[in-house]
Image (cartoon, rainbow, N blue to C red):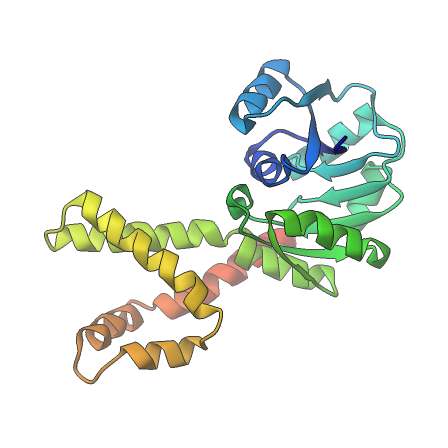
Length: 252
């Protein structure tokens, strides 16, 4: 019999994580609308246990908190019992705020990303060190994990890995648009860019980015011309600024 993992919230992040965990756990989802819970079940593709927030008893449950940060207090007031483990994916929501609103024996802040749905999330985490092993085992099921030593580091990581899929999606779309502008059909442009992203992931794990760039860029070549255009457009500084601006949002 599978152990049960309980999700408070039924949004996109909850669904992505549940996709990665559904083979190992019985999935229980708590929300405010049974129709939305039915849709969650349909999208997940497996039978789930469905509950409403009102007086939901968390006693001794392993809980993944996936509600919107603004709804934390409201949801907390509807719950009862003491969870055995609480893993919060709420961006920018401090441990102190979680403790004030959700009763649990141990709390860990985690930040997965949408790649969880295909088992490739980079999940950063911090919190009760006694739960480190359990947290790593749980979230290793949806990718890889990195335990950080402070909430500040987690908030910075949120700006990079948590929001990163959106940034990379922008780059992907821009590359496709560039290829189409030069005369390539959209279908082929997407296919070529997809192949680039697929191959680059494993490559960057073993080669320093500066060395990788130098290995591709020959004197007076195509890469040098394109790279210069990116530098002229302040792409590097824009990326640095994106991380800063995203991090600052977590501090509000």
